[in-house]
Length: 205
Image 1 (cartoon, rainbow, N blue to C red):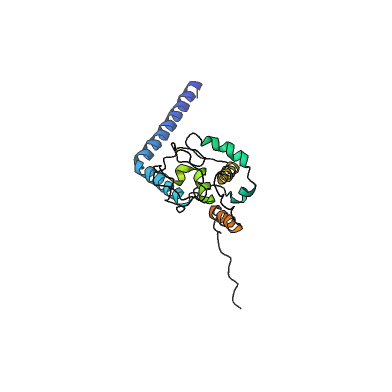
Image 2: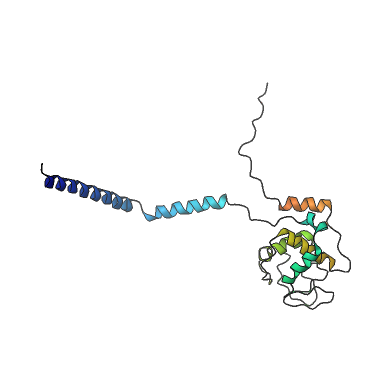
């Protein structure tokens, strides 16, 4: 067999293989409707929603308040000073005056028009724990709030800021008790995954 004939045979086999491959691809596309792919995607999304991670929560800070750096908190407060005043009888600005805010009823400062969303969670008093949650991410705490501040992310900064706000009052609120600290840590602790299986009960004798 001459070289020319061998090349022709090889080329014919190669072309036949390519045609067969593309024919299979086209046949598979025609026999598997796109709806199946969409359904598979939806099922996958549903499964991920069912097993999705819990929404993040701010770190507990009550145990840090007794030793928090008040001077650092005053520096952190400068990020709030564009909208708030902190002195007794200070004027309302974009936000209300914050003198005496620790332990004060939410949405209670005279002369300020609130959004009405601050009491949707956590009761109607600015406790240490509620201030921690709010300052961590205001829009997550109260989606309808007028406050556009993104939040204070570092727990040390939140603790320092709240410790400083505590001093801006006629009678500073008492520091959190051991019970308050334990409750906050329990409330904000991340959920542990459930055990895969319970231990087998001992067989009856």
